[in-house]
Image 1: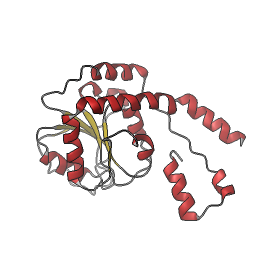
Image 2: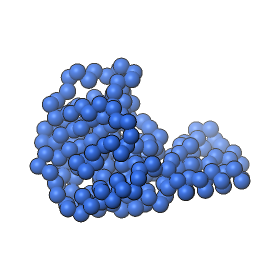
Image 3: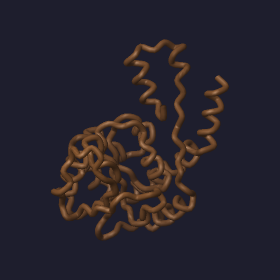
Image 4: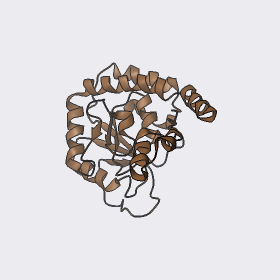
Length: 219
């Protein structure tokens, strides 16, 4: 498992004993983001410039779990923001034909490094349920502000970094409020994002991951 939340849920749902719980190891997924991308993003952060048309990035499957429908509602009600979207339909349970003009479809990216993060004001994540998505770890490593649903293992990454988590994660109003707060306080959000990037660089490193595996195998 890749986060402490799942471990706690297993303990509560299955009434695990201390002996059983001790056998469960949390392996934090290492980030694959190259440091050169981190440096590029941090240099941009220092400018503290908010573009005339802020660009919020979103990536994922166009299905119920990732809540693309909620994204379209958010976009309709924030026409001053442009939403750049990567992904495709997998389960075909979501209609993507009807969407506002400020949603710009970018197709499917092959590698995280292909994303133009130098143009990204913030990353939006609207999933209804999840573990700890590696995409959020990678985004966090770049120093990009994140606004994400407070579900699954996501709080283990973002908790403590003000403004990032949305408790009412099925409510468009809650996300819109956070987006507006970010646009009005961009320097504070970028400072929090940079602090998180420093944490991710150490906590979610490949070295820590390898050490965790070694400890688990030796136990």
